[in-house]
Length: 330
Image (cartoon, rainbow, N blue to C red; front, side, top):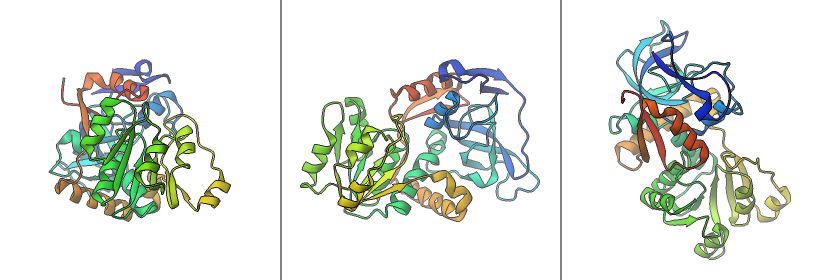
């Protein structure tokens, strides 16, 4: 089969090579899928660079998320069968940027019929991260004001949709007019172009000085620091990631004085700590997708040959929404 592999760490354009490799065989508790579609995710960028928390041995195939058709199951697998259309996470080092990939049985879920392959491939990491952040960690309620940073990114865009579905007022922060347009299409009530406006001032004005009840921050660094200036009394600041590069340092005296919560969101742990809740989350996401309340924002549908460039542009911060590789396309 053909697979994009990293043999030397570096920037995605340099690190990824298209190679001929053997089709892997499923081990205990695994399934083999024919990859139908796979989105670019920021962990793919970080794995190419060798700075992600998961560091597969070289060589490896990145691609942490996919939609695929089951073609083989291990003898101990009873949850999935050959022919099933599934979504979920690949099992490293045999990731989704290949014609076939391995998945752990527990990390594969039914694909909703209401979404095509590219849309379905994007239903796991971003949406489950935001569902756990908003519903499990922040207890979002109708009427809350939710500020979402990087609101057209892979996870930010899902937070906009899920917060709206919960009845919240959503303020999205983006970089540039093109991203602002996409953010409005996602349903954000107020869109802030951070290049032209101060999000702290806009949030305070929009809330009569009260601030945002929930702040969803996958950026960190200066974005986190300034977010503490516009969070409401008893608000929740969700620490989702550090795409901006600098890991934030919390001023706990400030959290005490303003009575807000700083809450970490590590979605991946739930697969090992509370798998039934992950399945409950997926069932709810399928319900929302079938009802039309959420639909992944696919900005680019690329063929298999576009993997290296697409992942690189995601790492450069120039993409909008989800960049998805339709593996069957040439």
